[in-house]
Image (cartoon, rainbow, N blue to C red; front, top):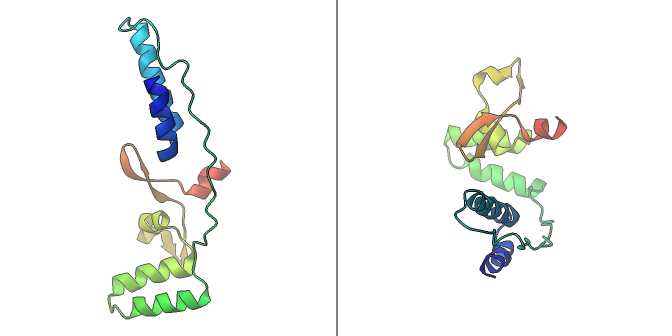
Length: 136
């Protein structure tokens, strides 16, 4: 069946293949409902379960790597670049959290990190941090 063939192909290439299969199934269910077709050809289709490997690669610098990186940043002589990368390197902020900061978030020598730039279908907007979403 052609739909199963595509579902199998998508599952090897896309993280969200099961969502695509579900969307196709829903579209065809509506086509049946409105009598454009007599039966849903995607009904027997299953999205294959793909065992994804977890990337255990480190995503941080060790002390020497950080020193080297900071030195390269200082060599730019661009205060905006220096401030940006010092903030990221020495606070542990995520990129989206840093981009959402405003001057109101800095009071009495303390940063209040309470939002982040997030991306969805509608585009980029400021919303809650990842940690806030996980604990709600």
